[in-house]
Image (cartoon, rainbow, N blue to C red; front, side):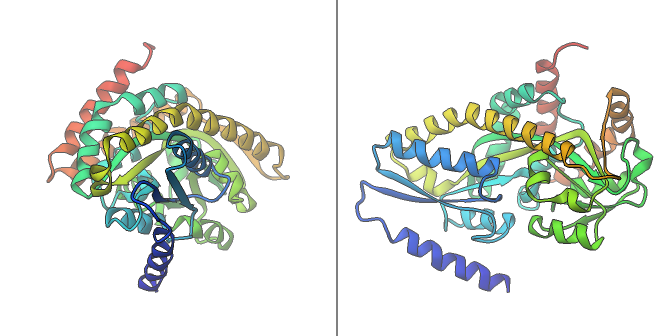
Length: 345
């Protein structure tokens, strides 16, 4: 079944690629892990507009939303093998391919200040140099790390204390660190494809999940959940990635257009995610039915979770990446960068 999906995707990609008529014109393809109208999709469409504008029409970008070419893991593989030029994928989606990126899956590592987090993602040497070099060993390069907002929990029970997770069937992305962090809390994590989360919640296969507010609202996850918990326990890190061979082969002037466009996208993406998450969170709160509740973690709640799992999850991460050498450096440097950037308590 999966081979058939990938084969169909390749036929579609060949049809798009065949539209190029001149070596001076570039027809590129970008696959995204989210649906039309999402933050990821808004980013992709603005990227296409900027490329067209800055190249005077020489660069066109065809966008393939969620499901068009496969799962988030499959579109990463399409980019890695050169079938598409660009991919927008969340870090947690590709942890099986690049284990070092599971540093983003460590809960409560980043502060609950979104402006500060965007600054860290933009300037971090640990990410933009060291982690990117690991991706390049896998055949892709990361052109930008950016946030789609803080992640929260939805559940059929209140989740304010570590003990509340005991026995909870919670959906996770295919990142071993995410699943293991919930096991430490006594939960029963289930890896479920993003496109199957809604049905799994409806059927009771899972009882809880984690995502940014706009995703929760747009995907209708609260249809079968009793509690929305504003936990901000992680940030959803998106990666703008390109096939490494493709990127290395571009003329300098064309590469400069791409780089300049991505730099301009950073404030655009930040505003888009903050505006959309704020709007969607208000919609979630205002549309709650009888029996549904909105809860927030305060500082004491966050500290209790940090004490319960913080060091243990970091050790798990180091165990996952111990054979490659760069993982421990990434975590060490990133923690130092976060500490330097954070205001004193």
